[in-house]
Length: 154
Image (cartoon, rainbow, N blue to C red; front, side, top):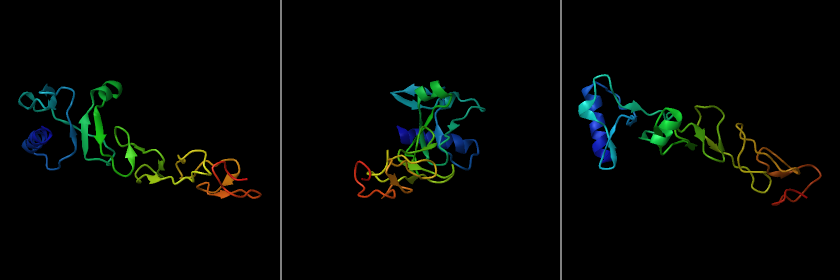
C-alpha cells in the first residue's frame, strides 16, 4: 500500500508541475481505506496539496501521526533520522550525543563510564565528572588522586 500511495502522491505532484519531490505526509483530511491512510485524490481541490515533512533535512521519510497532530498542530513524524538525530522532526540529538550548532551532525559524547556522572555531555561535548575526576571526557584523576575506577579516583 505504501508504494501505491507514493505513486499517487508523485502523480499528483507531477500533475501540478512540481519538479522536486519533497518528503510528504498525508494531512488530517486524508481518508482511511482498509486500515491504511490514502490521500483523497479524487476530491482534492486545486488548492489542496499534501503537506511537506519538516525533518530538519535529516530524513526523507515521514508518516502522519494523529496524536502528534493533536498535540502540536503538525502531524509529520519523521522516520530513520540521520546524523544521530531523533525526535518527531529529527530536531534533537540522540541520547549520549551532542552538536556544536544546529546544522552540524550530532557526535557521540564518549564520556568515560568510570569517571563521568552520566553518559550525556553538554552542547560543547564536555562530560560531567565525578568529584575526584577531571578531563574533557572525565578520563583522568585530579591532582592528588589516582586509580580511576567505577567509584572515581582514590
